[in-house]
Image (cartoon, rainbow, N blue to C red; front, top):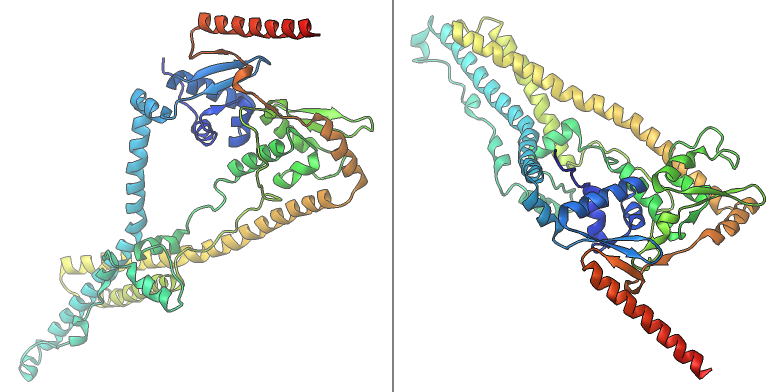
Length: 436
């Protein structure tokens, strides 16, 4: 039976919290469900030799060695395999990204060569009738010039952008081959980590208010709040309650506030952390490539289309009579036309898709901002709820002297120390009683 794999989100949270945490610490830091955070901590402690500490209040603290990742790496073959594959995939994906630019340039070069050969074949067939007039075939010195496309492979490619930046022109962190991929397919989803950011922010908001909030404080970070967003409908808080193990509390006036006991316990005093006023989604951009790179990438696509059309006219117009040369020329022509058509169509379709997607993002951002304005308004009901929720706000910081058990020490030794502490406490009280 395979051992469960530690959750990467839990590991990151433990590192950020200096390797000594409670379940609430991790749940708030990583934006995880409290139960998942507890399970993840148990798995991580089991796999890395972490220690459990129990406070007198019954709270559990998890202590991890700073090198727990090395412990996992040495212990888990699957983890090493995963890390190896991530490195390999980065290389493979980079090769995939630059392959589109390489294919573009290769087809341009092949199309130019094929056109030159087709023109020479056509010239040779015509020159058979009047060979003596010119002493040879028709010379086309202009076709001997081919653009130097290989400069884009140069390791000094990015230096050109340094010069352009010095001149006040736009700059890009992408080389040309990467820019071709960016021109075609963009640069990924700018909101790929939206859910992670959402729950981390909500966890931080709850922590900033010492584990007690009202719905209006959370609504600016949610999407689905129902048709009737008002004080009578707060079903949108159910996922928050389920994730952070919270519970609703009802005021004497019938208003609901939300209490999260698990996020009120920590091992270090929590400072109020800065969070955005509302969850803001980033807009999609067409490409991170510079304007010059985009123009060049589009121009090469148009060039390939023109070369494909020209070559098609030659190979289907009878300029090439040889069987193998004719087949090769037609293959290159078809590839050039097909690739250039897709190359120029994909960005156009993607641009229309981006515009529609950004309109929806702007609408969601505006809705969240409007919910924030409801909280900021001097509304008597909101003020009344904020006043009531304060009685549930609390923060318990567990100190070393609060511990009654730690798995990194012998149980008998801990019992002896505990007995000594109790005896010392009684002696102190007896002395105070004698003085009185």
